[in-house]
Length: 592
Image 1 (cartoon, rainbow, N blue to C red):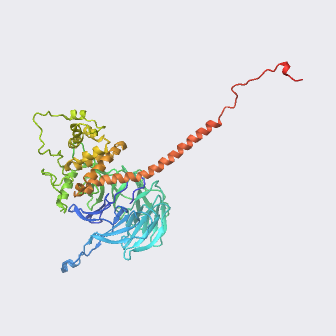
Image 2 (tube, rainbow, N blue to C red; image 1 turned 90 degrees about the horizontal axis):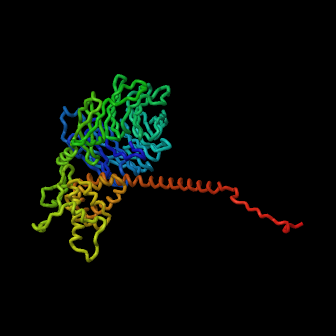
Image 3 (cartoon, one colour; image 1 turned 180 degrees about the horizontal axis):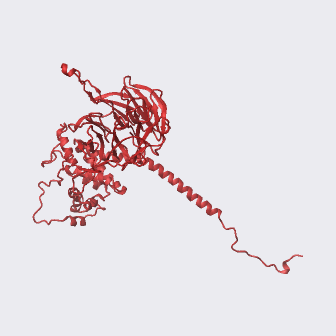
């Protein structure tokens, strides 16, 4: 499932099938991380060779299979009949047009499927029984890959636009593809079986809702589109009268992740879990038996919030339904460090709000893993790992050491210091007194540390208003190491605000990275600290090209309007004379 071109880029996040033992996540840094949902720890991490230039756009788990994990003991006769199937292969589509097949059992890349697509891969889908994989791309083509040979088995043009979603039926005979129009293909002949229209934007979600054969009126599938707050259910009829959707499920925002338990008969209801763009989870349960005029509301809506005095929402990343009706496996928080939890939800309540302390959960999961990175001791304080999430490192000023204040000297308050300081002018003359120069450089660092510790917005605004490059460099260089990460968090928050503030914050960000690059590189959770910042900058850069095009078009329109107005003003000139002069001739001047 790929995000629409005008929406926020979707980060793939999928649970493994059946046992749901693993969670595969492709975060902002381009790395694939597989988390164990039972132990809630990082199981494997894979860094593609082109993880920055060819980022991962979509992921899909393959069917469970028997895996040989090396030499094992000889099984007893009682154990010989039992063969355990595990989730192993994982397909990853990239922006470069290649498909990577990763093996979770081996912990390495299984194979690479290339030389097929010329555009970014938007969706990948496995065949339920055979070793086949289907991929849809921006180049409007669908490719059927044979995993035994690692080459394309067949390739055909699906639509005039980019293929944004794929889904294979449970019997492996039909394939759904979508751009703005949904097409149902016969996989044997590769011909269109049915066509469905009804979405005004790119379809991002396709899923078969029933396992019944297509030769009856009991085959249903659902679809969801970008910028659409509805999930539509379509019925495949024998008479071909299936132009409109039969059921609609209402959502609070566009769907991002959908998990479905299909129906095997008319007496069995379809169970649906939908995670929307706003981070809410909606649960549905409905019997598919013909059309339903009114849109169906969710039977239960789940939201998550933190445990602070003023609760803030925690976004849900994905969800998976369990065999038990009331059990749901949730993943929430950050893509770089997700939190997984199995929750018993009372579906009799329409709205459920779960309160969780994300920082505590993150610190517990990190303590259980062994890190090979040693964090340097930066001072005599008891700060061992100042960069770990959930650990609030004390922000202290620079140690004065032997420079003790004299008892006779007067204590200067912060207000008096701010009154004496001129943030816009720095004295660079040779004759300037030394005391004034030290006041300018030292007080910036001290006030910045105090503002970060007390979270005083007015104090931080006074410091961040300076535009002098040398003052910013000196202030950042004099900061203690314990204040570097809080400063980065403050810069990240301010960069997300007004563009005028972002212009000032970029200078501070540049100084922090240049002055404290060695310290930042030694932190074990550097990706967690800088991932949000990197993702935000990358999204803004992507929008810059589109905004430039829009600016050029608006400039052309305004120029043409001004030219038309000036031409009208020239053509509408009043031709009537303002003054007429007639000269009277005397009789002597007249010629006879």
